[in-house]
Amino acid sequence: MRTFVLYSQGSTGTFNLNDLPSSGHRIDTVARCVNASLWLSYALRHDTRFYVVLNGPPDPPKTLLFEGGGLEGVTPDERNIGAWILKANAVPVRGKDWARAQKGLHVSKKSFHELMREFKGSLCLLSEKGKDIRTVELPANPVFVLGDSLDIPKGELKLLDKYKPLRVSLGKRSYLASHCITLVNNEMDRRG
Ligand SMILES: C[S@@+](CC[C@H](N)C(=O)[O-])C[C@H]1O[C@@H](n2cnc3c(N)ncnc32)[C@H](O)[C@@H]1O
Image (cartoon, rainbow, N blue to C red; front, top):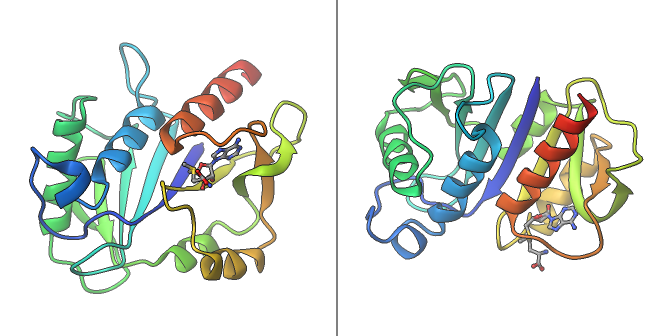
């Protein structure tokens, strides 16, 4: 199983599908990361799942889980993915249990830190300063963690350090989050 976790400033409530970047607090970035994580040219990646921890207003945090092996009726365009995020945000959630928004899409009140604790031992933090992905030995079921345009806040990174993530680099240049996911997927596909 391949897993991606995005730390996002995105909205946990409603937003305008015609204005994902502003009204959705950069939900456009989240939609592109869902696309990059789960879509091949003509199929979904059944062995991959994508988590996003939304930390924007009005009800942070919320974690959404998109399962490549379970999704139905979602197309790869940003507007369609945005509509599913809207639907997930509207599901009433209180505890840390997962509530179903649709097949393959679930939502909970888990925080970034709680999610990191669950994935302890498999964490690969994407960082320009990490070990080169082309040569590093990865865990059997890697969980790739990355931030959106504002990066992962320093306080969260400090907490994450407790779980000793492997720092993995895609090179010295800083790439957009969705592009990082594409590069990781390509590297993992080549490894077979
Ligand atoms: C758009 S970048 C964050 C902003 C970036 N630090 C900057 O100053 O522009 C989004 C995320 O992509 C990941 N990232 C970007 N470039 C990377 C690289 N060369 N290697 C590994 N991860 C990278 C990091 O996890 C980062 O949190």
